[in-house]
Figure 1 (spheres, rainbow, N blue to C red):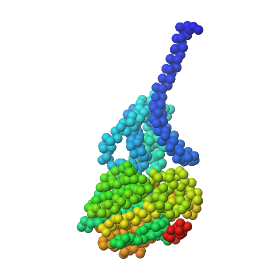
Figure 2: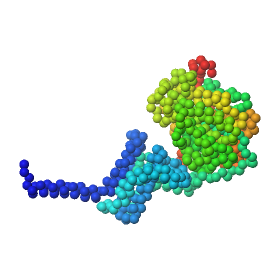
Figure 3: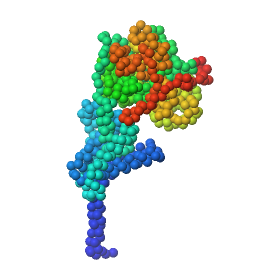
Figure 4: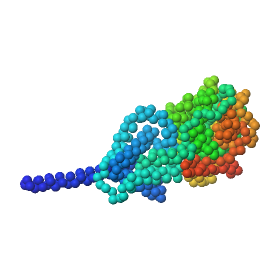
Length: 590
Ligand SMILES: [Zn+2]
């Protein structure tokens, strides 16, 4: 076959023209292309959100928000005034890169409360910028798609009034801020990330004006003269239900707390109300002293328990049996950690043995002749409890199948657990075996080996458990939005060396037993450190050494900042569930 020259030229020209058209179109829609490429980078983040939402009305709302925010972004890219467009492009770029760097460095979503604590740890930014420079550069490079997509000169004019593209990004941020405000900081997940820090900044400005956030204050309370000569220990267990322990109920699990050794006086304050039914909420409040009426402000602006302890001349030790590798949890920040002299985690210890490692560490600290504040975040009995105890402690049978969860300290996932009636029966048995080990054996070792003569130890748990004894459906044990009373029911025990004179525990004991709460612990700790009782009470409420007159409620909508209000659940002790005698119990003679 032969081609004439003319035919070849015309073919070449045609394809050249086609290419030219594509090129022209690309140039014309280059900004859209860059923005689309930038947004496409976040596909996993959007899909994760969609997956979490499932099918329903929430997905529809999410989709509408997503479209509105992308539309606003696209309009921003078509602002005619160069300076204004460049300004918006830069702000969006910085915001998006900030968000991405945070997520990649911490491997977790940037929540509003994390954002607030970041603002107040500004001192670390230089340090962090150096440490994470590679992540910052790579996120910045990705962000260039956004910067150019927004900033380049638009090649066509939108058929809308000129002010609309300028108003669009502002409206986008305001829309997201409004949603977050109503939802107390929640609701930005899965949406284009450049809006999120900007909306957080809005919320932050609102809160700063209303004094619910602010810089952390130094210690201002007055101490009576004299150094603290003894150790103060706060043991915070995990998911240990007050209604499953032998100190509170006849068929409860053996804890050993009923028979303290000679030389140790023990006060069982019985059932207590927890601060909240979620771990983080209770733990952070135990460390900062938030009260029912004023916890947002107190937790975010007043000194931590570490600051008070150091100011009283105590060395500060934190033992975290739940996390490893220096990971912080329960809303602890690097800033807070700076006031901890010794930070202990057990990276090399299997999950099952972490509470025993904590006991060994505590025994060592109690014997070192230094006055210390020790706070222990125990491993306890969080879901899953299949493998949290050794075979020798399988007293309650039949229990959950063994061998799948040896490496899991705690999880929100429920894979491998169906939550049927029979599953919960197995769960309760495994749970009790776990208590035998992580509470009973823990205290057996403490009582046998620790020198408690010069120490005050307060024992409680972060929250109780819903173990579905009434056959109520569901897979969760705590942290729910419509909790059973048992989720807020925790043990509260004080013990100290019999020769030690600290607070007058006996004075109000009969009045306070089964009637006090977590909220009484922080003021108790401060009084133990020698702070003036009147000053302590004015801010933090009543200590256990006086009639607590507690409301006996727990908070199940703790993140009640901005527009939201907390929800309180009162615990009626006449209606709580306690375990009955089982074959196993009768066999071992409990
Ligand atoms: Zn917990």
